[in-house]
Image (tube, rainbow over all chains, first blue to last red; front, side, top):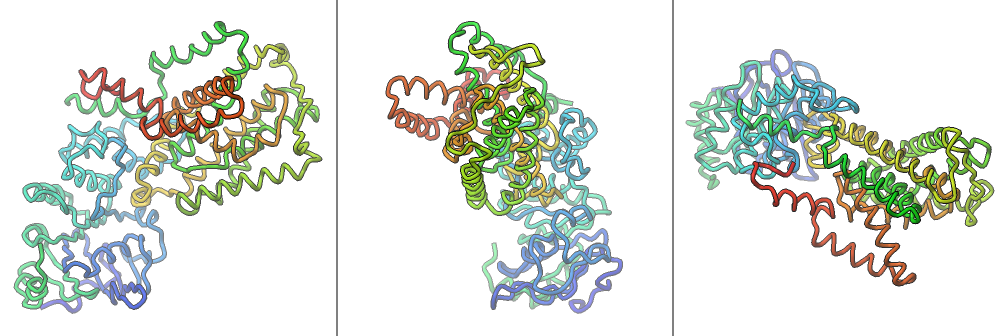
Length: 260
Length: 332
């Protein structure tokens, strides 16, 4: 049984790792002393009941939230004090549990914006967008990959919810991440379409290390190779899917709360 | 592959003019020949339109609501006026210097403005407006205080065209400046920078997750906007040959805001239409009743905000889209 230390020492070899990561709000401890390592190429699920602190954890990994104590490392380099933008430049991208898009921009504009920011072109004043042929081509390729081609010219706000979730992913992928953090990528997507969202993720190349939060155990079983269980801000256990699924402590946590 | 890609690309902002736009830019010239006795109104519309365009960059694109733009407008006006009075009478360089001074003031202002959220920003711009107004008021030795600056005698444009009493030179001059500013903005807004501003307006919280620094982008937009407002103020000083302290006042800044909202934010043409609508309506309403014209202006403002989403130009664009639904996405 794992659940104690992993195969990877926190800093070396891991794409992303944390040491003693803690976040408190007054007396409420959202994350407590989390040691975690995401190996390169991982397909890693982060599960746990509502309020376990999963999104808080991701927010600290991406720099949205400063930890109360502890450290975050990207590829062995400490990034605890770095802003969100700087971590993006180091290859960390994320999606949001609740859509965080550009409602009035078209899908192409949104993805193109992400690509141009990645290339540091966002400060250019005088070159018309249409002159960025390779970037437009790259954006369209990504859009086609995600099956959004028919919507490329539509304002994002006019897309069906499931399609908007795909735009969430497209924006994250457009930053060409080495580490992708997905916060319930299929949240709110009709049951039949959530597998489609995950099949997109499953097709990503192995250079991209993926950590995703997901409530649907069936999806977790199908798409993760390793699972970390977070309960009340602490890591309860970590291991391969079959170990986790048969772990009585995990079953107890999940049976104890009427999960959806 | 399919049609989707060209349609999507066709919707990217482009600086290229469409035929309708070229025709639209000819209408002022038609007005020039149709109403040769009322050139002053045209000059004033085109002059203020530059400031309202500047405000559109800040508000309509970058999403910064500003009640301080009269400060930059007024700084430009005083700069242009003072230059002339102290012997620098050449108009074009005077105008550029006016813009440059406002640009610097705008940069300093931007350091304060981009912090905080909407209401904070609004209050900071309001505070800036009040501070600059009272400074000008107090420094009456330089600014003329409540009496304003008069005796602004601008040298002929290109050394040839006198600023005549009928306002012919002033008309063409302001037309050219307005057009230049419009083209500049059109180019800037069709660039990655312009797209990033719209990105910040539409989803400012997502921008850092794409690696963009929102604050620095907003600082640039606000600074640029202030500089253009200064050009507008300089234009006012040069074409009316007078600068009053009310050119720095917060009520004027509020009028800029009203003009922009009437026309519609975030589409440049809204700034032009709104300025024209406001100033023409004001002239007509003041003819009817010189004291209570603001009553009707208030009614007009509420009517537009409540019933014409996207202002005058927004409503026209929707009407246009409805009239030609045949081709998919005929709006553009």
